[in-house]
Image (cartoon, rainbow, N blue to C red; front, side):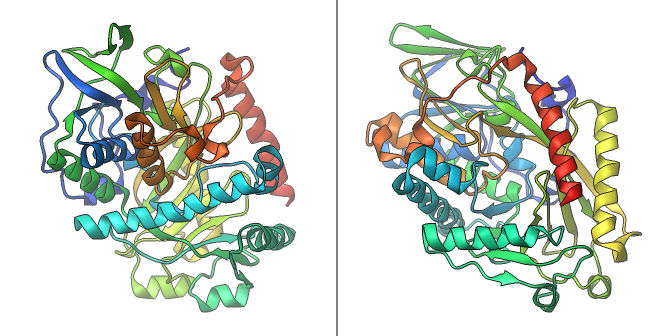
Length: 447
C-alpha cells in the first residue's frame, strides 16, 4: 500500500486553498525542479520545517553540501497548512505512561526539549527577521464537559510534580475575564510555553534562509525511488537523479511507501480539517466574549483547536474523515462548522472564507522518531502527532548533528531514539483509525 488516502490529497499541482496561502508573501527565491543529474553530500527529501531546518543546520554548522528535493513547493505539506500552534507537543503518549516506558529522567529530557523548541522557533524568527505574526502566550486546554475538570487537575499536578511547571487552572469566570468566553467550556488549564504564528510565513522565512546559506532546493521533484549505490544513494525523480552519501527523510504524513520502503507500515497519517472565518469586528468579538489570541484546544480525545488570528479572523480545526475523498471532505467541513457554531453561537452567521485539510502523522508507540533507520546512511525525523511546529526546530537540528557525526543516538532522549516499529497488520491501519474514532467519539460525548 503506497497511499492510505484518496489520491487528491497528494496532488502537488493543486493549491491548498488555505488562508495562509492567501496571506503570506511569496517565496522570493527560485526552487526549480531537478532537471539533470546532480550530486551532494547529504540529500533531504521534503522541504518542510524538518527538512529545511536539518539542511540549514548542516550548511551553517558543518559547511556540508546539501540538496533538498520536494514533491511540490516548499511548505506544500503539513508545514504550510497547520493551525500555527507553536507550543509543547510532539507525542500523544501520556506522560505517566512515558515514565513507565522510558523512565523519569528520559521523560524529563523529552519535556525539556519541547520547551527549548518553542524558544528555537521564536529565536530563529528574531535572528532572521521573519515576521511570522507571533501572537498570544501559552496554550489553554478547555474542559468540554464538567467531568473533564478532574482530568485537567490531574494534568496540572503532573506538570508540577514531574517537570516543575506551574500551570494555572482557570474557572469559567477567569476565562471570560481574559476574553475567552464560549459555550460549554467549564474551565481551562493554561500551559505557559508557546505562541501562535503564521505557518507559511515561518516556513518561507526558513526556506529563504536555507537557500541564502547555500542549500539547493528543488521543487516539483517527487522522489520515485531511493536506490542504494556504491558510496551512497541515488534519489530518482522524473527529470533527474540526485546522488548523495547520506539521505534524510523528512516527509512526515505525506511519506509514500512505494518510494520509501524503509517507512512501510510504520506511520499512520491522520486527516485534520481547518476553517477560517472572515474578519470579526471588535463588536462581534465582544458579543461572543472572545477577544484574546491565546491558542486553545478542548479536552476531547478527538479534539478541536482554535484561536483568534491577528487580523480578527477565527481559526477552528478538528479531525478529518477516514477516506480522504472530496465528498468526505465536504461532510467533514460541515461537521466542523456545526461544532464551531455550537461553541461560538454569536458567530453563527459569520462566513467561512477559507477551509482546507492536511495530514498529521502518528506512530504505533505514539512518540516522534529522530535518528538513523535500519539501512546505513539513511535517517529520518518525523511523526509529531499533530504538533510539530515547534518540535521540528529541535528535530531538524538534532538530526543534522547525527548525520554530521557530532552527536550519537545517546545524546537524544530515549523517547525519540527507539526503533520505529511497524503497525501490526499494517494494511488495516485505516480500520484501526475508524474504530478508534468510534470509541473516542462515544467517550467524548459521555464526558
